[in-house]
Image (cartoon, rainbow, N blue to C red; front, top):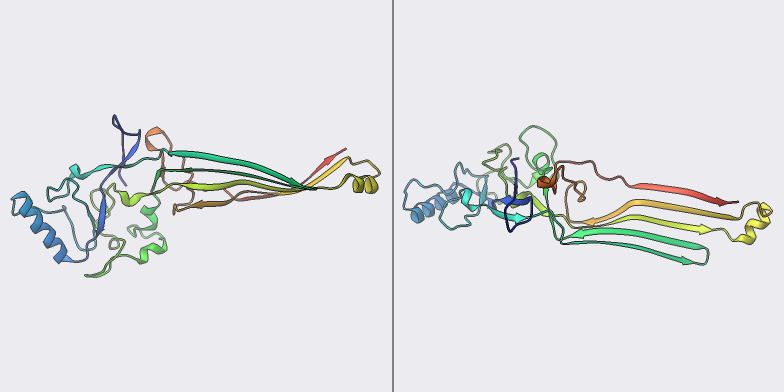
Length: 249
C-alpha cells in the first residue's frame, strides 16, 4: 500500500489523499462503454478510462470530468485530527455502595485501515476476513471487492483511495469500579475495632468500546506526525478485570 497523506497550506497536516472509489467492474462491456466515453471526451480514439482496467477491478471516479482517471483526479479525503475530544468522569454513592465511571471518546475523523491489505485481499495466501466472500468471481457479478489476486499493486486496486478510510469515532468505557464499604459497627463487632475500614471492589478497564471502525482498535497512534491515523495492525488495548480489598487500621 503506497503513501496516502498529503500536507499543503490550507489543509490539515498529514491529510489523507487519493482517489474516490466508484465500484467493482462487472464485465468487459462496462469497460468498453467507459473507454468509448473517454475517447469521445478526449478526442483520442485510443483513450482508456483507467489504465490496466479489467473485469473485477476497482473503478475510480473521474473527478475532473475529462473522461479518464489520472493523478489529477486525486483529492483530499479527510484527516485523522478529531473535531471533538471528550471525556466523562462520574461517581455516585448510595448507602455503602459506590460506583465510578470514566469514559472518553473522539469524533469527526478518519482512520486508514491498513489491515485491509491482509483481510480483504488474497494476494499472498494468508487468512482473510469474511468480507472476502463478497468478491468478484465471474462476469456480471456485483461485488464489493475485486477478484482475488488481480491487479494488487499501488497503481491498481491498492492505490490510495477512500476505500481504505473509515470513521474513526469511538466512545470507550475506560474504567468502571463498583465498591462496597462494610459498615463500621459490623467491623467493630467482628474485628474488635482492629479494622477501621474495609472496602471490597471490582473493576474493569476498556470494558466496552462503541465504534464503527472495523480494525482491532480505533485508538490509533501514528509513528510520526505525517502518518497519524494509519493503522498497520497495532496491538489492541486489553480488557482487564480487577478485584481488591482496601483495609484501614
